[in-house]
Length: 125
Image 1 (cartoon, rainbow, N blue to C red):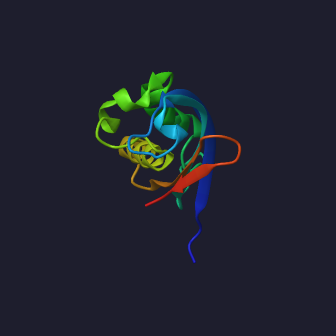
Image 2: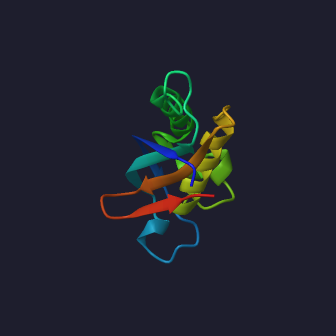
Image 3: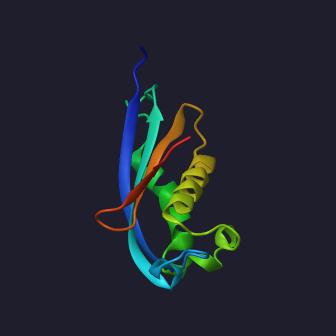
């Protein structure tokens, strides 16, 4: 079995949303302090001995999260038709970071979105 390295970095953002069609309190405007765990995977080390620099992963993640931070997610172009559930937020962030990774030897592994200390979504492809 080939070696693999999974690198993880954490970041957070705050935003508000309301869930369209939800039969409960989450249909009302409310906010979260989201915590995001970004995991990338690779099997090759570069000349320095890294899969990818953590700074690069954070840069990509921060670019995506900056669009969402301190916003009303329902107004974001991606979420005007798609409900801003934790699941859809995880998928969006994962795919946006994957698009930014320019190294063919590194891929997104999974993304975890925590909406509070007890509830999270883990997304992978």
